[in-house]
Image 1 (tube, one colour):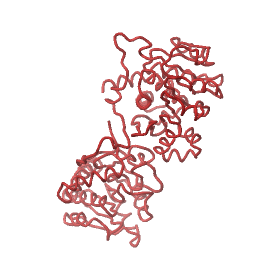
Image 2 (cartoon, one colour; image 1 turned 90 degrees about the vertical axis):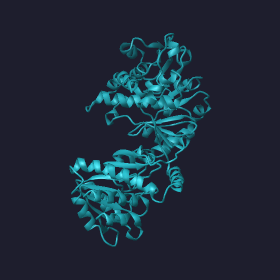
Image 3 (tube, one colour; image 1 turned 45 degrees about the vertical axis):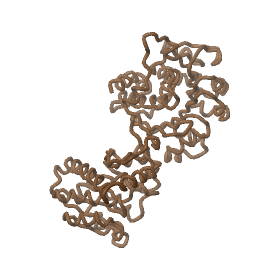
Length: 488
């Protein structure tokens, strides 16, 4: 499992490690890893280090020091290295001295010097190293740094960010102004939440973690990202004596005369999610049976539908508030999606004793929180946490980065799989059925939501394969994603 830690936790671990090491040793570890990554990038973009042109964008503090020491290593290998100093009087002294001893040169890039000479250097560079702001930065780039970030974006140079792209928030993933866009981010000691969550993740490019030996406590993680092996351990596998009830029966209360397809797609996700059986309740029974004859259809309503271990309610439900309210009284886990989110009474959700999993997209989350959609999209972590706290439920916030916040707090799960092709009608209905099936199999709401998002994202990649795909294609690809996870 990949974990990410907040700034204060990382800073504390750095202080602990520095207290037992010779002065400057921790920075040298970081600089060595950064230089190695830059060497690989130069091999791709320039064919070699010797004779390549490297520009360091250097702010004050240790982030700039990492860039300067790495630049010195590249200069000793024959690269032409120029450091643009945005705050010359506060540049890291030992790092600056090391760069100059290695043959590197410096250019003043602060507001009094103007950006012209630095912009020209960037335009000729093979590699730009962003060491402007460290993980403690807040808000967007300062005015004098914006022309340099713009020049890097316009240039042909590869951009490598030191620890995280300057201008993004390390703890939240928010971007509140201009920020560097990197091709590669080399981060030290631990992933930071902002590297894994949009919109900041989009600025980070590929992310490489350099282990510098920080003593990080596992329980202090802010984010978790499941990997194949983690999901494989969660997925239910039937035993020799399993029957449909032992495997889990999921009830699906979805669809309407206007949206029968939502019911079909939710059932599709549930059937491919490992459920022993699917009970369908709603007005789209004929459409469901025509596509999936193995479905158990009931016309008696949720309370009289028969035995289930979990419910999915809401996809395509229209204005059927009565069914949503009835499902919420069930003493089994319930997943609420789509129209169900609008129709569910918050007090009824909070009063539930069994697990509740809510699966909004940004627009639905914004409506529930009473804010603009843009606020949710720009602050995905805090939005998911706030919604989980208000409803006393686990919240799976869908989107470019899907995050899952537990009802009781703790690390937020961020989903590493997916593709932009999943932004298609009905895709969320498939996800709901899949997650509901995992709830019925006995997974916690956090695990069911996380594993379902992982499989759904992977299935989306397989279904699309670089071309448009419909929600039904995603459902059909779930078994392939399941097998891929099982193979590791």
